[in-house]
Length: 190
Image 1 (cartoon, rainbow, N blue to C red):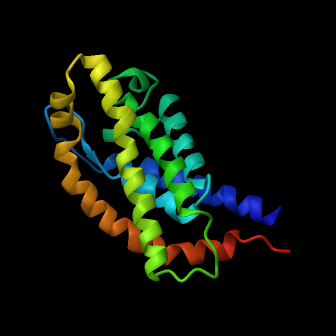
Image 2: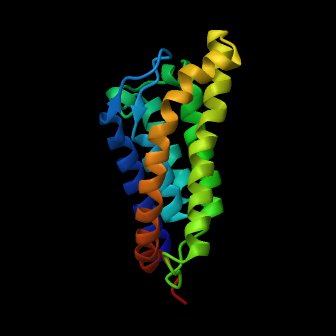
């Protein structure tokens, strides 16, 4: 019971962190898609919580925004965002959190946070998370706008790659350091 309650608290706290990321947005690109910190917080939650933890945090974030809370980029909200040009990226957040969390696995108190194998797993999980966000985002943007693949990539992906590389470089060591801390609170007590 203690483990489940604490895990729920961690999930809600990470959902709140993702929501707070809406106030950090830089307009960029001709597609109108801003540079945001929310994808970093989504991947970070997936890496720290592992398994399905980041998925639930991302799903709470998307649901809160769909219900009209001002948690999407620039402090906006509403269900219309799910079907707008950036709606695919919102779906991508949830999918990215799921994949990154499953790749990262549940945290353990026995982890060696900065061992080569652990860092490589975190880099793989984080890179997968950052990349997966783009897949439904690009497909939905192309569908909605009628733009081709290359113009969509120029508007929705290429301008964001340098920022995502920097975010990945920050996400991995932060997650590696915090995973054992989270594991102390989330570990099953038998």
